Image 1 (spheres, rainbow, N blue to C red):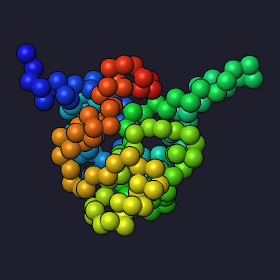
Image 2 (image 1 turned 180 degrees about the vertical axis):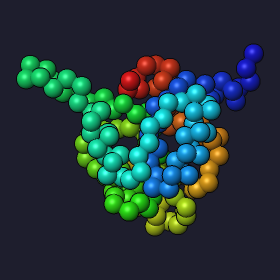
Image 3 (image 1 turned 45 degrees about the vertical axis):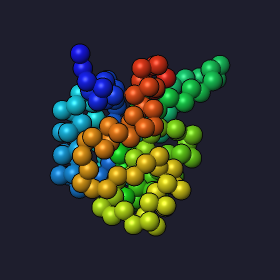
Length: 156
């Protein structure tokens, strides 16, 4: 019998987009996520992430069909400071497309202003670097990502 905490974190494989301009940060996060069985893609800047999300958004676009909004990702981990498009700016663009993917802002500092800016831009939650996988898993439980997986209401 798995313990309650093991059951709590049985989310199954999630599709996670890891966005960070530091290659080592991306590599470490992806390794940790893949070790937990999650599928990962990566981007080294916010503008690339926005474009990756945009490409996954429209699933049925013929004249006779409605456009179905179905983001490919279950979670996007967005670094705060990136050279071309910051995490908060990328979150704002992603939300403007009508995408309701679970966005976690990842920042080296949890200054109240930074947290406020990220949340006002559309991030669901904020984690400080470096963070433990258990902190991200706690967010998935808190925000119902595990339940949405079980019910099949997360986008695939």
